[in-house]
Figure: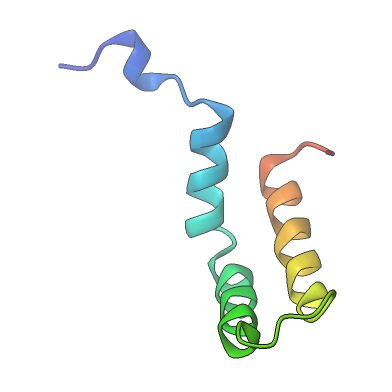
Length: 65
């Protein structure tokens, strides 16, 4: 049996859901970029992938940060 608190979706839970389902392609691309360059990390190496992932999350969350 569900309690009323089971139906409440916190912002953090919504972010987790969207980052693993709605934005999975963008998250995968960013993760692959980080994985490919983690030995020689430089500023803005994966900036484009990170921006696409962030844009997807903002769109999915329907809130401007």
